[in-house]
Image (cartoon, rainbow, N blue to C red; front, side, top):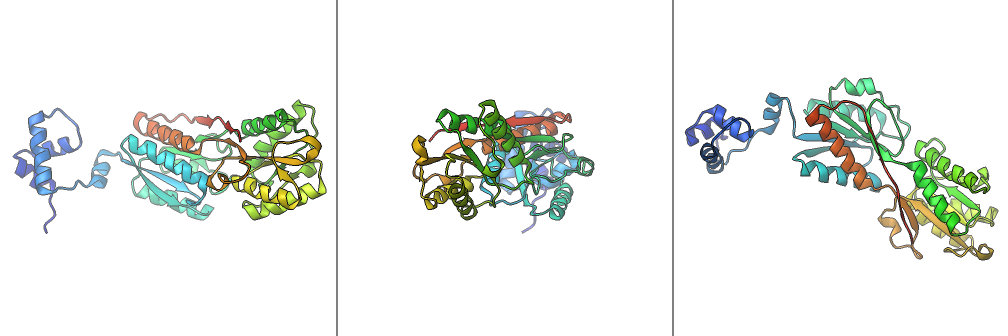
Length: 334
């Protein structure tokens, strides 16, 4: 079948091609009667507008890009969900790409720029990625960085308040009567972890409690590494009565590690019979623990929504002044 063109629509409606273009683009002063004729012609002929070509002509786009390191990461999947909800609400669609590493990240940026996206929200390939603002801005696109830790100040940033989250978690445990609190998970190279440990340490000092480096333990993400790390920690330091866990999966693994060390999980601090566990950013794998784990959450969906709003602000209002948007944490008390 012959492809229906805008000229065919114009002839069918008895108007000019310019009038059809104005109706489809919702621009100019067109009478309702004329608009109805054009829309009816579009429906009769089954015309499909080439939005990519229209975007090029108008130097605008209804598509925004989103680059994630790993689309299976539960945290960033929630970020993506929030961003998609907000962009679709405002009439935009999302072009999603998975970067994996630094080299592919640059390729994703270039490909999206070539495809004519209106702007790009991106998550660095790692928490310590040095984002080159000049290289990114060379694409002449609005940009928003979504990350778990602060990055380049020359680019819009949306993320959590890690120090406040750790302070909230530590204060919660202190209020429960804990005085010997450990931190498990993450790597020393992680900026997110450094910010959280800063909040944890300053809170201990504020309350005159001991900060012991041997109670701060690194381990890989995942339940198995966390279970091993917590078991060894509690066997070597049985006086510990509470553990802050860097990842949601670390908190779940910590429950198993405590059991393997012969400890119960709960809030009874009497004679250190039980160990309390608090995690960050609860995900589905933590919903079925018994007893339920307390979490301090930085709403990942809201982070995505705010990133979308900021990206669209740049697109529609030409607001290029870099902004830093921080999402406050909340405590989910078990």
